[in-house]
Image (cartoon, rainbow, N blue to C red; front, side, top):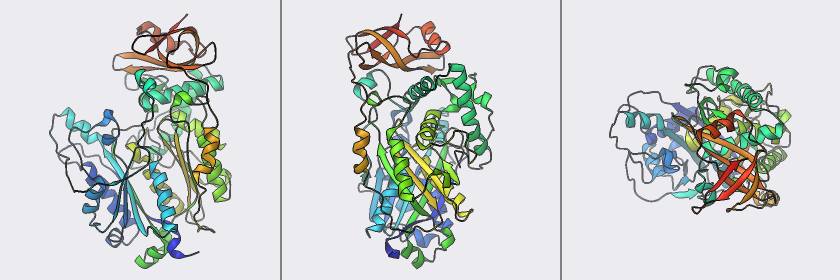
Length: 512
């Protein structure tokens, strides 16, 4: 094995900013730069590592991803170039700004490791961050911040630009994670044969373990140790967001957090004098995606892509999940964890625990960059436990884009050479869901559903159903407050009714 073609991670940095004054707080690009500098210091060679970077990959910010988080204060025109300038790393010739996706930190590391093995990369930075807490505080105070800058040029883009929902899903207001994941949750509940109250308790138990880890993590945003009952019980402080999810079951996006990891070849690490106790290897990895629109899924409680990614990652590593010492399963909502556990054969009460950070609801969910934090934290774990192995899973869109990585300080015994994802992606694509229709009419049955809430309470419902001929459709219900409350109090899975599509292309399902 040629040292110049062996990729390793050598530095990790994480920042959680708690400055209450928006005028004093670091703006997003400066927050990311702080994490990158910390990662360089973690390698024990500092600026000399930043000065040798040839590639910078910056995870797309939420303000450039979703209308819900758009910054009124602007931002950099070429974010990775602005970051390079702050790091005195202007020699970096490859500047990349990713497309959206919680899978993108792991996906980017996978691509960079492959590039090292081909001799195309010697030293690279993967970083990202958000300052949504500062943004929100400034808006509340009616402050006029200026986060704009133009460093010139245009960054290369990685990933998939395609949005995660279809036009017909958009018409029915299913256009974001808070709308999609509750639909999976009720699908899981139905598959497991639980009542609403039984499933709420199980979700509370699942996330109680995540909260306990966050309570011990000084970087976590929510360090109160919430009990299962507190998590699962709706209240004024913990209202439903999208039934059956309370606020404490949702990824916490309004935080100021950044993270960065730096990778090199073994030869470059030796040249720079990076101690071997800093080196972390990637033993197994894989990437895949499920059918892009959730209308086309086989069901609402599984992920063929997650199952395939798990199998391929362990096959590349040469061992199974029983050899893992640490886990960090992507945890934007309970359904993401439940599906990952089911597909990987891991118990939800596994004594190893399911997170090393505390998870997105409690540690924090900094947009597309959470997994950079979980990888950075996993590096700490495996460095502190020689010979151990830790697995990180990453999830983009709506249980759609899946990625995973197994990390260890134990050197790999073969070249980094993951299987081409196209080889197994065709198997996933072949698992087709039922035929769909965007103009349903007739008798129908509810397949899964959610009730979205605003500050006043239940606001509207989204559901997937089946016509008598088996075709699937998406619909809303009449805007009847009493009906919306009934959908939460009484189990609406399997509910019979009638669906009709209006002139605006909106399908309305009425029970009865």
